[in-house]
Length: 165
Image 1 (cartoon, rainbow, N blue to C red):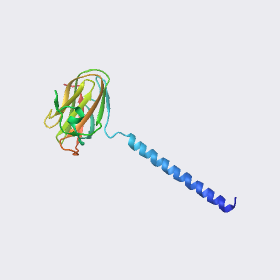
Image 2 (cartoon, rainbow, N blue to C red):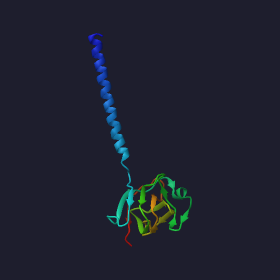
Image 3 (spheres, rainbow, N blue to C red):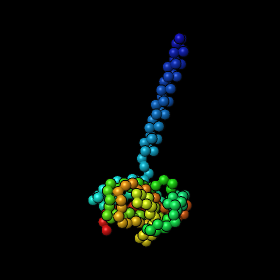
């Protein structure tokens, strides 16, 4: 192998290693960004703190709530508005709660859908224009969606979860 061929080989290997390192770093950064949830998930046990527990998100989506729930109304209220395909939050209750309230606070009129072990519940305007669901809750995994009245209209919200009556 000539000196010139060795130089080309070393240069080629150096470039290949540099490109590989750059691509690896970009992939690691992309994975770190994708692993961070946009909205929070919560696991609760009785006497949790702080009470109320709060989580934040953006309401809305493009799927009619009644399509996700399979009904126009539940005992807790109408299934209206537009939500995302995937739930905004997941709530895990480690045991039965004799009383638990989930209330949405937003500057916009929002709707609420909760699906869990005991069924599906919807609400609109529990307190003013803010939805909420209160009562007894079975242990298990719950999916929570916060909707908006108009398709693709998004508004920030805070969900307050409390054991206090």
